[in-house]
Image (cartoon, rainbow, N blue to C red; front, side, top):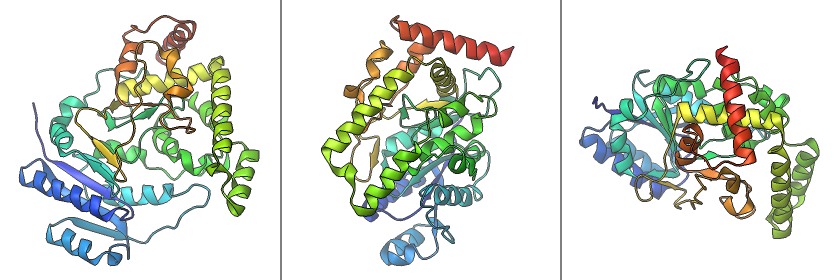
Length: 354
């Protein structure tokens, strides 16, 4: 079993100083143990000047600081361009063949999990090849995935081979100009991009199922220019009920099933999903995110309001690989939907290989 030192890349703004310092102290301890090699903070010119004590602490403890000119927030796309640039700038300083944890200053990751990943070449080995050819050399660790939106994956932190992580950087404006992918779904544009060529069906998930409708965009802009309607529970409840009404209809749609088939195939092959190996494995903005367990046997039970991560949120998260394993080991409870999903997966794989 090959063990090697890992690199840590922390990107963006300094959001939670106390949490960031605590995490950095743990990283320094891991470096002393020989688990970690380089600790890199890729940020913007002038950002650390706001935190002189933290700046001094990082320099004293030999954290590599990379500072670039901040691009500025795109009102439509949000901070995705900034995220791409700060990550790209950091990866340039890392050997392409090293494993890297990419994270942020408002995320704390249990050091026991990081220590576990010293065996990354074994843990992240791809054992289920994609039918049309693999995109990554190794799997990428993510703490969660969204069940209903293809490639809506955790981007607060992820871990993989440096050369593989470079595939997650793109500046494709099509997501804005053609598909109207708003800032709240920036996760998708990062992770879906490498797979679009081999899985063109995923363009449907961007267009037919993924775009925010223009009328909703206008309502959102109007409401927030005056006051935020979405802070009212009745409005949130309406959004929630509408989302699950739409989802119910989507689950009957053959094209949507094909999108899910491609999505789950990619997840099963190219991603390692784990939030629960250690207590409080990932803390985000000083809070331990709530975990709602999926039904890993009956997939139908997961497409419901009671399985959403937060009230009114509409997002259904998986925090481990149990459900995916049952899908691809063909050990799901048989239902009309699960049978159709399995048929869609088989057809998708056969069409790519033939």
